[in-house]
Image 1 (cartoon, helix red, strand yellow):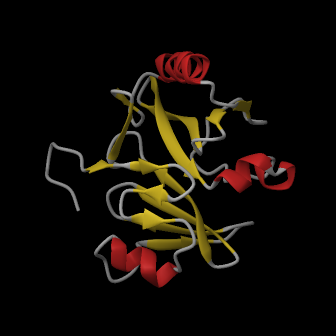
Image 2: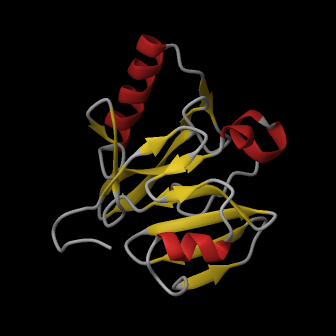
Length: 162
């Protein structure tokens, strides 16, 4: 999926998906889109979670893709207005999202773990510790999850600040 030393670039499509992954896909369709026979692992919890090569995590609601998490270091890169959402300094990432929201009128949400989301774009920035640094680890979430108090308070916490 990736070239050594270079990240794959994925496009964000708010409330549709990210890269080759579309919200609503089945687990088999996600593996097919990522060009792998199956995930590296499956994790239990409130949502079905599958971990794929190259830092991609898929989260399911009732067996359908609802959230995609990208590793800060090895996951694909997604850009928003020229800003790299994966692997940037965490403070800089939050400042960028706040400035972008103010400029474009996006709705802002702070989740219970102090992560910042732009709900209408379906972007949630989490921290990932890498050595001594805290880097941005983006999650791309279907908008209904960010607008629903039930889902918003139970967003996948895997990979959150440690």
